[in-house]
Length: 268
Length: 277
Image (cartoon, rainbow over all chains, first blue to last red; front, side, top):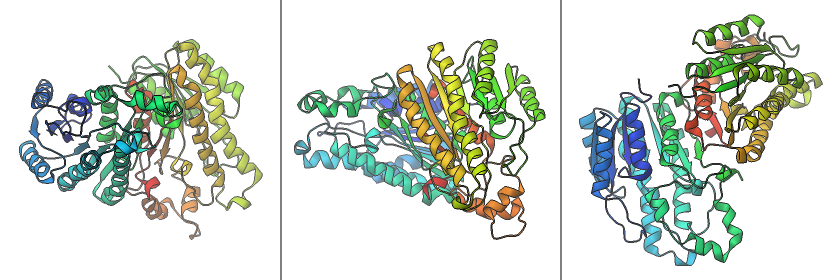
């Protein structure tokens, strides 16, 4: 019996990286999946974003586990598109129990190089996108009699990483949403928690350049990015294991937690 | 394949309640167990503590799962006794991977300035110094194994927030967080992770007694635990009375397993939202 057997999970940013890993890990433990991803490029984002082929690969991997998946391209900035995706998924899979608000983008630059467009895209995707994902999903969780919402924040949701101001602002904001909704939704047996990864070995992580150069100008800032455990990055699956724990009934009384999967990055 | 297959876990306060539950849950997932408990009464503790028969029951339950267990009667206030127990357990079971510093007491029920010297010292000695002794006895074995390890300290929802009339307990449980955070830094280079769990009220013998009823219902003359139910509910955000020992054990299991291999320094609440109100 899988640890989330019979449950249905809605995952944003599911075409690759952490989102795909969450879809596969939850499917391994018995969940069916509703997967969305923008599958398109934002021109403020300096690394290649996911493609329709990436989302098709997630479908293949979930189906190889004999689980069902409803996958649709949808931009988390577009609440109407998200609502339609969730409603199609719930119509087909019958219910909703788990929400992983995972979709996110990142840019690296000094404060005076942040363009209005980069600021807006980051806040729209990483903060408003999380809000949209929850808002369209919550009625289905209430209908199911409870559920587990996991929002992906970051070590940048706990401390002020330099050269990432829009990202840091959005990821801190995610914690605010989660704390508020954890109180508001508890009466429906809906739990709301955040996960806070350190650097994760994903296409987003490896596609981000420029940090070394910026830190070279101010070496005093380098240690902020260092972990305590002797690893530079963690794997997507490490985040998925934390998501799985929070999603499962093993964590039925865990809510309002900022769960760091950060190799001790924030305790130094 | 169990989630902690082949590992060995050292659990204090293992005769009953959360400690027994941790031993059984970890054994269900493949771990062998080194179990200690005082199995005796401390005179400032206003409810019956565990007995040798309770520890025997833990042994029975772990063995019923086809796991091995070394169970020793030992007081966490006595470092030498604790060290002997761990050393004997490791000698027999071959290794050590997981430490669950769970043993704890409560007492008192009066404002901080009216607590007795003895109450204060007993609670600090068991709930804080006992945790340090547990770690001090166990860490050399984790280091010697050179495979890393996971230490889970049992704090409390009262380790992150104040609570009236049990300042000895609250102070000790806050102290556990300081110890956890420091150990996490000291042991990270060895890939040994250190985290704490923070339960709300758990359905155990430590709660199911008239002293606890009085702590939560100071307004009543002779309250029963049922009289305290509405207060328990009001502590939590999720609409529940209390959590069960297995809920804490599931968190301990996750932290103990390799699934959490990069999680360290976390204060993990299993508190139904007690901490976010």
